[in-house]
Image (cartoon, rainbow, N blue to C red; front, side, top):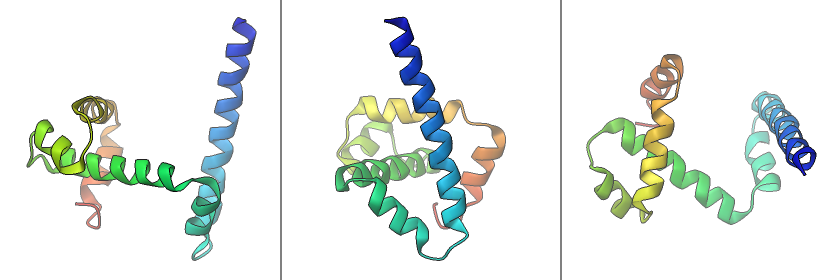
Amino acid sequence: MDKGVEFVGEKTTVGWEKFLTLIEQALAVPGQLGALFSLLFTLEEKETLATRVLLVIELLKGELTHREIAQYLNVSIAKITRGSNALKLVTPELKKFLLESASLI
């Protein structure tokens, strides 16, 4: 049974690496990224990703409490906590990139 779990993890890692490569390649072609995401993500998955982006932006802005963000985005406090915990793990370079992204904040 452990082999099955290990295989799933390995397959996930390989798939994730291929996904990131596809994104990098799509960025070089105008309009390609949106088309790629339309192929790969369902409407529900896009909504989940969009909510996660908005959640991270609100956490970075630091203007609202976790409870206010949860109410504003109509998500659970647990989701806000997971997002907050994830932000604690990002590299200083990524945090700087996010904070400097004028289109986000």
